[in-house]
Amino acid sequence: MRHILTISLLALAACSTAQKEEVAEAPAAAAMTEAPESAKADIAAKKKADKADKADKNSSGDWTTFGGEFTLEEILPAAALLSDPAPYTDKTVRVEGRVADVCQKAGCWMVIAEGDKTMRVRMKDHDFAVAKDGAGSQCQIEGVITAKPLDPEEAEHFASESANTDVMPENGMEAGAMTYEIIASAVQFKK
Image 1 (tube, rainbow, N blue to C red):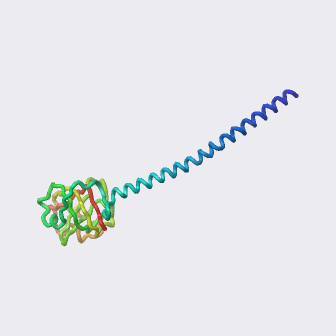
Image 2: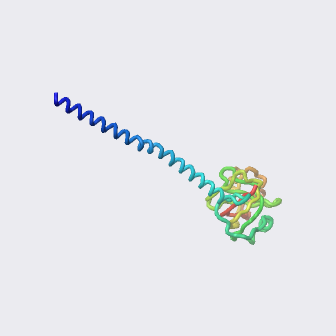
Image 3: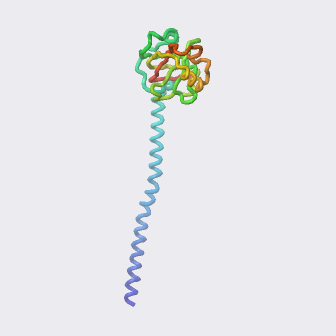
């Protein structure tokens, strides 16, 4: 009988200790379930701040910037460049003009226009893209002017991605004719 009483007392003590541990663990468990919620809130706040910082960085007043930073202060009017691009070949320029067309597949190229003169702009190394709804926007572009012979297959490719094939610089040109492009490192749009 004494043996049964000893076992009963040991069992009662064990239960009492287990209940105390459960009570002690309850606040810790509650804190653990609360921690992920507060961590989620912290992460959401950081993402929101990062997004705001990025928007501030990429927008300056009415301008939205794509690509890198502009480094040149002097701005060349598109009319001057488009009327005679040859003297600017292999030079870095900052040009301001009007967006006439943008690649509808990826925003990786655009066309600037002044009157009936147009020029293709490609985003350097496909490192960035511009807004596909940018046609009609005022733009500034910083990049290197390049000259190369027209490739009919490439022109056909551009036409397949164009929203306005009427403004394609390659229109009416013969294969091998010299074309000029801007390889852009930075672009800004202003609606």
